[in-house]
Length: 492
Image (tube, rainbow, N blue to C red; front, side, top):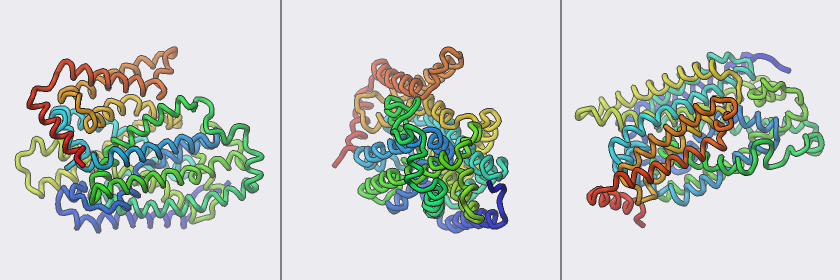
């Protein structure tokens, strides 16, 4: 097996990072206001927003955790990934227009109108930890795949990626992020389409691969990944794709409501085509690299690349892995900074100037990025090489339902009162954390599994929304305001 990186590989990586910074510098001169910095001017073409949505919907975490699953179980990660397709199609049919009408200055600004300003600020404060944890997991993933798998230093994998993302997002805002997403999409295409034929050749051709694959390798489910698990995971991924701040931003930044729908259809098509191609190398490796140790499976994609790719292409793979993570993180950094700026800073600032708003927007970007990098090192120390897939599911099982359900109910359900949202948010998180703490007991460890913690937290959130509506019913003026908001979203 090849080891280390050649000079040409480092040159390819350096060129990639230089282009990313160059894009940030270019767009820094074109972001004249905080509205442009956060995409509030609604001027993004649907195809660019769609590619950006797609790039933001996964990261190197997918290449790490799903490739490990592909090596172990075969087709299972394709089944899991395809759950995103109906989720995005549902978003196109029911969410695209509503998100574009609801959000104005940030992904959650409508919360103050639909619920209360206190709910909006609380969601901003409590939603940020989930964004930070999710982003830290993605940075840890890029460290795993290019650090452990390819011999690129783990410390520098995390630091360089984090600093470059913050830099071009800091300089150019959403427009720079979108442009970089498109470039990174092209980089990933080169690698993704080059690798499967080489792996198929090493596996002795398609017939030999199918013949030598373990029994049940092409089943849709395996092990604990049953159809019941898939149903719960569909709810999880559907909630994420419907309410993730950076993805909501892609809906409302398009030029028109029709474009918002077209964007979602493009994303659904890409999410259907991509998974079998992405995960085939890890599946084929089960035939020509059958003895990868359990503690190295998170790096299987990188190990395959080192085995079959020539010098220079390995550098392109690392650039592609960075691309997957950087696209997702840059979008999240910009969306989180929009929330910090518009829902926290501007609510206490007294008539700030346009320049002050831009300074606040860029400072918020640096703050979010710095916290993510720091949290990544803490998580790496605490988690090591454990199963990233399960870790990410536990995080989302606690925080996602209490955040996503009130957000979605806020644009679909009239009956919930304005003050019920805060009870649903806080009550759901408290219950989720309680379940997680109880799950520390060995005999109750199953409670921390996504198949348990997600539906239990979701049910608790709904109960608190109903309870909040009963305890704090709307006054006539509040009810009129809710009806006016809902009428605006559902108008034809």
